[in-house]
Picture 1: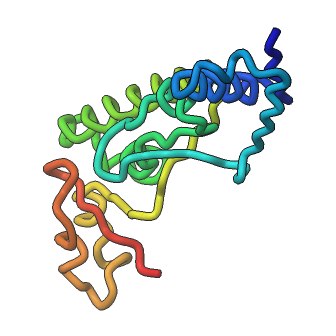
Picture 2 (picture 1 turned 30 degrees about the horizontal axis):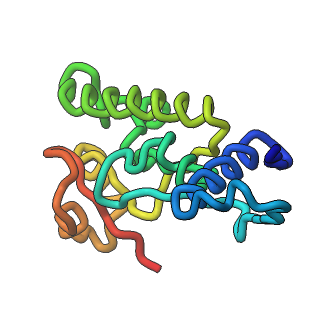
Length: 169
């Protein structure tokens, strides 16, 4: 009998996956007694994401690979700004941009639900400020240094009406 012990669901899942991976490399491991394998995570939060792609890896892949968290779409692409200024993504005059954000929000909700069902933590990167072009048009004088017009064209847009601004460190 082989027992995989852990402090919780994720630890048990990681232990089983690790044992299966080792047995694929050398099936004799399943017949060694005692196995005496002890593994501990090196970090509390272990997540993986692709800075250039959406939802890579899936929550299922992240769990299989031994991560305990996944990164979803950057929070700046999920904001509607209604509580700040509804004109930024006005439902009437900017319906296409708003629909794009709503679609991403639904995709993020689905991704979060899948991750939570697997007991994974969810993080959202935010080191790149991404604002709707309309926000820069409406608030340029308040956010640009000396009315610097280059702020809205620093990077290639993620969407026709979104511009990313790298954070300054």
